[in-house]
Amino acid sequence: MFGFRPSRRRFLGMGAAAALTPAIASLLNSCANTSTPEASTSPGASPAARAIKFSHGAGLCNMPLFYSVEKQLFSKHNINGDVALTPMVSDIAAQLATGRVEMAVIPFTNAIAAYTQGASFQIVAGSGVQGLIVVAKPEIKTFADLKGKKIGTFQADTLDVVVYDYLKKNNMTYKDVEMVYFGDATELLNAYLAGQLDAVSHIEPYATKAKTSTQGNILGDGTDIYGQGYPDCVVAARNELIEKEPEVVKDVIRTFFEAQYMIESNFEDAAKTTVGKYYKTELESVLAAAKAQPPGVDIRDKKDFMFSRADSMKELNYINALPDEKFVNFSLLSEVIKESPELWDRVKMKSATA
Image 1 (tube, rainbow, N blue to C red):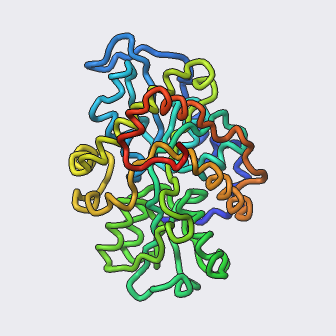
Image 2 (tube, one colour):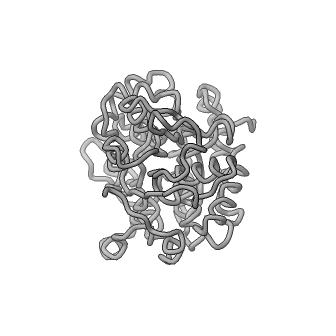
């Protein structure tokens, strides 16, 4: 069997936010706190460039980060942006919480789980929106048909919460289905393709691959219950970075805006730039998934939405308390938009907050 089934009680009992991965002991032992500025020694980078390493996920909502790194967009702001090896979804929060990285692109529900256990970071911007897709075998056409069936996803992830919210809307609970949790995007996809799951809640481009390979049905993509433009991955920064080097954080946000514009303008180039190295699927699946999970840096009007999902997480016993108002800090994002309005003006996906 590919997956594992830790209970939500056990998940909660793991302790610190960094303990969202079974390998946390070795991670803590190997962590080198990167909260102080470092000069970059990477080829082609300025000797004085500020090195910023990001933990990250595997979906299209991470594309602004991946594209920025591959196209060296950070260098315009004298930043050497790089990505940390992040084998499992739970490692994103672990690396951020322990200080192994200073910033992360992370599903906002994973960030909530870590934040409420004492992690010292804040959400400062968006990265990608929508794309939480529930795909089921051809014979399963509605959520009611999922009763007694196996659904695979990532625990405490936005993909987990969207299943819970859909079941709740259909007067069902997790007692009506069998949830199977995974740590890796490819592993999750392969389990579904191998017939070991009846349905999968996945991000793009893997959801498109799941549907096309099995001629399955999309039971929901989140827009019917959450509305258009709901956030998935967000940009998080450690508190000390925000406090001591706010201009660095702002320049990262500027870079994400630049990447968003370039991705929106030529998605085929962005797909070719990132497929293989970051997306373990063929180019066709990435191209087909483009509209389902676009980049979105300005999510200032989605703050309440993110907090409302914390209610679902509390009902699932993933958190004991709701996050406080400091969890989301869009002040630097607002400053970037005010100082560099041309960046905001030209992107397609933007907040309704002017």
